[in-house]
Length: 235
Ligand code: UDP
Image 1 (tube, helix red, strand yellow):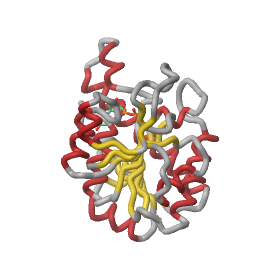
Image 2: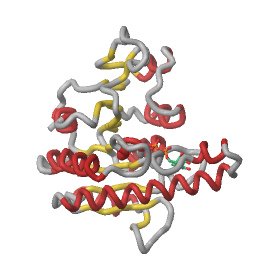
Image 3: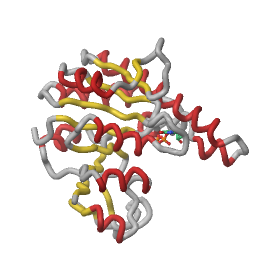
Image 4: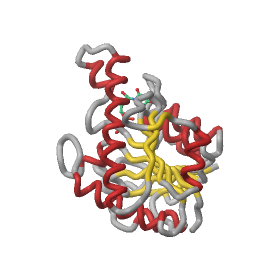
């Protein structure tokens, strides 16, 4: 395996599958199976899960809700997704721990860096819920932050598209995919990989990001083995 310790970022929307809202149990089970293929090979896996399938602070704010209140709802949504993912992973026999950035002790462990690293060393998948624990951030920022903290080798951003293109592939059929692109070029070309806060944190800490299609079975294993799947962003 090319990577020993990875941080997998899954958006809340990815969990919806073909639904308009909420969680699709079949999609979740497929993700769990894919994750098991890499834990079986000894790869240490941490996961940051989004909450967009349930609630986003910005959309709350656009409907007149206080932004911070909405962000708190969004962060709690990520804990709900984390619990769902934890169950799906445990159904496949993977030991897991859910750590939350917001204290919610009856439901999840609090985020403790050293404890998270110990879980990983013991072969447990660690799911980080609650984002960064702060409003005005995204779970992409949480993913980069946690990846740096736990000294992950790479962030794997599992999405619905198979990489980064020079134009939107869903709108422009001439769009060309990059296999590799530097942080600098992403900024120069104004491409969207993550929000700016998350992206610059990754760049400053020289933490590579691989964007790939998580919905294609077997892709996760390919990425972790070093096959050229998706787009790698690196220095
Ligand atoms: N959120 C937050 N702070 C964080 C992470 C998330 O306030 O550190 C809130 C924010 O309202 C966000 C929501 O949680 O809209 C869900 O997270 P995100 O939109 O990143 O989820 P994804 O797009 O990955 O599904």
